[in-house]
Image 1 (cartoon, rainbow, N blue to C red):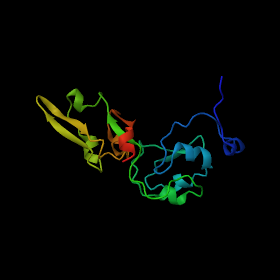
Image 2: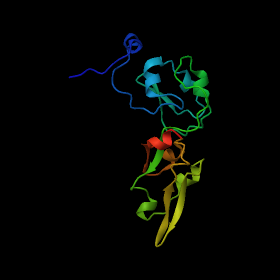
Image 3: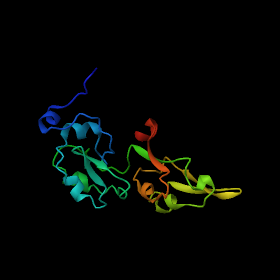
Image 4: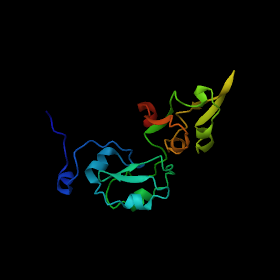
Length: 167
């Protein structure tokens, strides 16, 4: 049975070795969090939308609390080299509307489209039923605004495909 690798910093700080399952703040990667983050929590304190939580000593975004505005406050507050240089305006993930969506079940709902700051979720007409969501992966920046407003939790985070992530 193979043991997961652990950095010297993680060992000395007493970090657990379970894999990171959270959503990294904008501009951070799992690798930089595991290697450089000390878990000081300054990023969470400075987040104006209060979506950063420390889970297992590492910051993770909780989109059920709100959306990421890409303001950069977390990056400015961080004393460690966790964040990439330059500004970040999108995540490596996008929203994904599941089959449980009310509109897809013939119930009129457009909550996600109404709050999307990028207008990435639009609704197209359908004969004999309410409009259905149509998500544009090119427009979606993964901010999470749509997740908290969905009354049945039909929206999830999905990885952006590789071609888009490098765009």
